[in-house]
Amino acid sequence: MANIFEKIVNGELDADIVFQDDRVTAFRDIAPKARVHVLIVPNQVIETVDDIADEDEALIGHMVLVARDIARQEGIAEDGYRLMINCREHGGQEVYHLHLHLMGGQHMGPMVCR
Ligand code: 5GP
Image 1 (cartoon, rainbow, N blue to C red):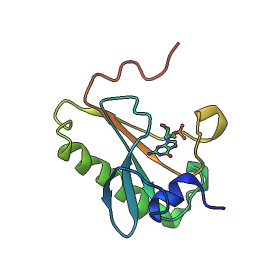
Image 2 (spheres, rainbow, N blue to C red):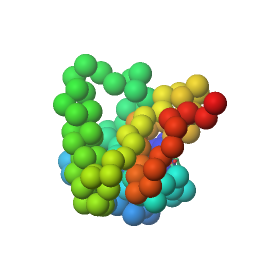
Image 3 (cartoon, helix red, strand yellow):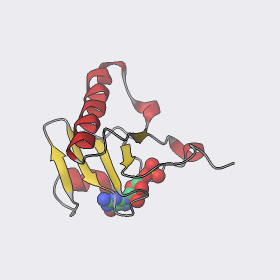
Image 4 (cartoon, rainbow, N blue to C red):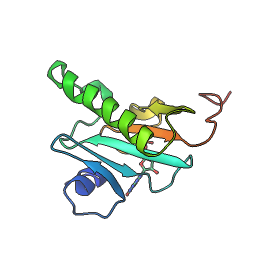
């Protein structure tokens, strides 16, 4: 069964898509944790960071460059932003389809709560 993000990539589930090409899809988070909160996902299913293969190196680099470009489009690049990937249970991953969080438009505070 397709996961939520796979359905968004395939157009089976609505999302506010800000960018899509043959390798990645970027869409706004449904419950944003910052003024700008976009998720960049590979179009192919890779469940977690731990499932990334060596041959996915260019794809992962592409995800980061897409995040960079979206940050510029959203007007948050100059002030800065946070890129984050959660991995499995201890990382707090909820959706098991690799995704890069792009968050900004405000100060993001300390990286972890203590
Ligand atoms: P994780 O905790 O796995 O790193 O992040 C999952 C993110 O996906 C969360 O920030 C959550 O708000 C977002 N999310 C979960 N379901 C949906 C959905 O159906 N649509 C969109 N656009 N975002 C979702």
